[in-house]
Length: 343
Ligand SMILES: [Zn+2]
Image (cartoon, rainbow, N blue to C red; front, side):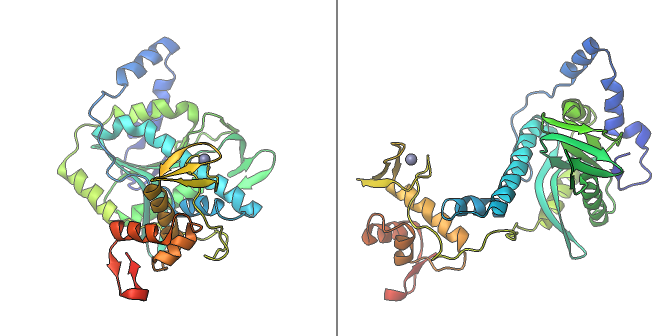
């Protein structure tokens, strides 16, 4: 059985995966017809109730990568975060056709009893609510004695336990709601040897039929569903998670403007544009400097934005005067004379 928050739910009849499994046993021709029959109607695209945003630590590490050599363990971590995020985006595209008949809340960071937990995707339909934990594992894995291994031998945190934890916490936060929770492996190049017959687990080859089966089971949403989505959204706390990052200071990072296309620090001024001597691309001076200011304020949220600071951050590109004009145009001036800064 998938993890459920209400024991009264008659799972043998209502569980999406068990029904999906029954349908899955159709002979091939009928099965294809079944899938075509259930393909979601093309309706006007509706944005998800809450969109996914790139995790802050991934944004920061991508910025740092351009300005300092990353230690090998940070490079590995960064690649892992990127892969996870790419997987979530891939899932968002897969579930897009169902958005008009459900409220989708991606990437929720919630708290219960001082414990923070993350929900990759929460889906509210007219029938029930679904919690999806998304894994973008790639390659050969093995399940044995309630443990997951990346072959040949490295043991992972059991993602079913992660799912169980998130489910339990969410169920406490929303005690009157029925929630079904699933662990979705979405990478087509994922193999799980000795996969358990666990009804919360959905393998890549089962994913399309699983989603179609959910879609076939619900009708129009009501104001109650909308209120539930709003309530959950209101409980979301902004992502400020920045641990596991390398230490850095303003002085320790490389200065300059890197190319938007190829990331090289080989820009030269060309009128209102910056020209990259490496890849030949052009970018407006103002947009390149604003890009650098965005990096500066993201990496150093406590620093006051001043003309000398931005000028130094941009590797003394352009001129003091041009940077000041740009700050005056795009930001609000605060303070007087040498204490002037921008917000
Ligand atoms: Zn370039």
